Length: 116
Image (tube, rainbow, N blue to C red; front, side):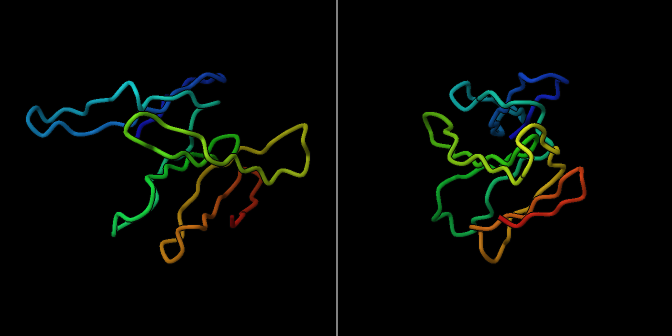
């Protein structure tokens, strides 16, 4: 997955695949979606056995969990740990817990770390 970096609200995320014949990355328009603000990180759920749904996490203003299907992408969760509803401290990074993929850890520009 790749995300645009436009310093405004409207950004995009594209799910790309490698065309092995041409060696080029190809984006599927059905798997392109709007994302508020630029993403600071994108990462698929680690799933070596391939028995879980294809989940993509993104950070920016909040942590978002998306489910990727052949016909589109659906937002499954929007997670915010901000106690002050007026402002949010941007999330700078995150990582999946490889032992328990139901858990993620995020870091914020205000030095807060959160385990979800």
